[in-house]
Each structure stands twice: as structure tokens, then as C-alpha cells.
Length: 353
Image 1 (cartoon, helix red, strand yellow):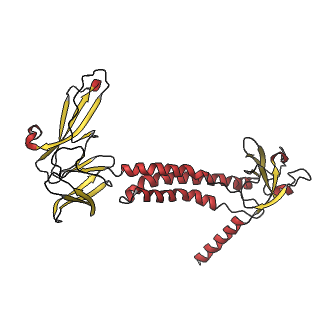
Image 2: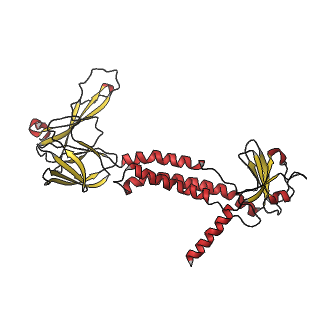
Image 3: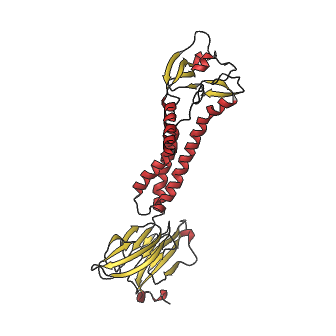
């Protein structure tokens, strides 16, 4: 029963939508500056006026209280749809990388764009209903062709001088273009890659053993880990994984599990995982240069822990390479440079004290 009622309601709204209104087309100069005091829509005595047109051509159109409400409703609907699309663009872009962490950003972008265009699309293709004896929106508007549209009732109410009835035409109610959705779509296309990258932080995985290993994250194969016992800028496997709690599993070529840990990846942070490296020590070297020079020239901070997984405390400028030599330049503003290093613990006894 409810389905039949809904179908009849939709059919009635569709007929109202597609049924053309009889309008009269006039040149802008043919519409007098002082209009009659009757409501432009229903013909009753007017109580308020509304400025219609643009900066080059404008008329004060009289309305009664009821007709002014439905004449102003399309602009309110349009603003509400634009705000809803903008809000959807921001919230969907920020949350979809968390809701669908393993899907690609291209698929997420398509879904976000479809959600963003929905409010404006509904407002565009589902205009307000038109009551009998009333126009759907405003009683006077300037078309893109430079001609003014007047409804039949306004012409009958004597809005125009005698003999100036204009050119009759039946056309659908005033329908706007879709330029209002450009900003929300552009905003979604800009924000989603940023949030996707933020919620997929980088992870560097090192294989410091002597055999080839493979890495699995939450049951998904991430690739092969080649041995890299010495320091190298390009060493290890470079990944971007969804933030949150992840199960890291390391297997050998025979499929046996050699290492397993539950790691918490933080959005916007850098991470390091070095399984099967009990005799390796990791530390962060920091050096300040120029006028920003720290009283202590170099500082080393050891990375502790038995899981061999670390959330790096600072942004790393240099990976697995020594810091550059200090240049005696007091005029340079300089700054602090951080390098992530690793070596056998026996070679760096000062870090194991």
C-alpha cells in the first residue's frame, strides 16, 4: 500500500515537473519600472516586494506573503544543496580512507564524487512543486537569452501596457545549470588524496638476515624482503599501509613463520620494522648547523624495544647514511638534520650502556 502511494506521489511530482508553464517573453525594456501593486503570482494585494534581475537590469516585483515564500524557496534550496555537497565532500574525503582502508584512492574518489554531487543533483532535478494558480518559483526572471519571462497571470493582471503581450511560449519552469557543484567536486578531488596519504603512513621494512623473506600484513602479501645487512639509503621495502592496528607476519621461502607482531600505525608518522635483528641497534643522529647550532653538536637517541617495530619520533631527513660534515658557516641560518642509523650493537657500545 505504501509502495503504491509513493509511486502515485512520484508520478504526480513528475507531471508537475515536466509540465510546461505558459510564459510570455519580452525584451527587458518592455517591462515597466513601476509594476502594479497586485501579487505577481496569485494576483491578490501585495504586501512585500522582491528585487529580481541582475546588476544591469532589475525590477521590484510585488508579492503577497505566501507567494514570496515559495518564490524565495528555490534560492534557499540551492544554498542548502551547495552546503550539503560541500559538507559531504569534506567528511567523506576525511573518513573514507578509514572506512575502506585497503581500497585504492581512485575507487574512493569515484564514490566520494558521487556522494558529493547527490544533493546538488537532487535539487537540480527535483524542483519544488507548483500549486494550482501559482508559478513554480519566481514570477519574473531574466533568461540567459536576455529576454524576460512573465507568467500568464502577471500579463493578465495588467503588468504590461495595452498591446504588449509579448511572445507566448510553453517551457519548463526555470531550471539552473550545474555550476554550483563545481566547487564541492573540486574540493573532494583535492582533499581525498591528501587524507588518503595522511591515513596511509609510510613503513620501511628491513631484512637484516641472510635469507630472502616475504612480508604479510593482515593476511595480504606485501612483497619480498631482500637481505640488506649494511646501511643503504634504498635498503628495505617501502610501503604505505592503512593506519591502525596491523598484524605483521614474516615468512621464509618455505612458508614458515619466522616473526610476527601486532603493530599500531599512526596517521602522519613514519615507521620502521626490522624483524630477525636481535643483534642490531638502531638510533637517530641529530646535528645542528649554522646559527641554529645546538650547544651539543651531535645527539644520539637509541631506539629500544623487543618487537623491532618503531614509530619514529621525528621526521627523518637521511635514511641509513651518516650525517653530512659540518660546515663552518656562521652566516647560514642552518637547522637540525636527523639521520636514522643502524649497526651491530658490538660496534656501538655507547648505545647499549
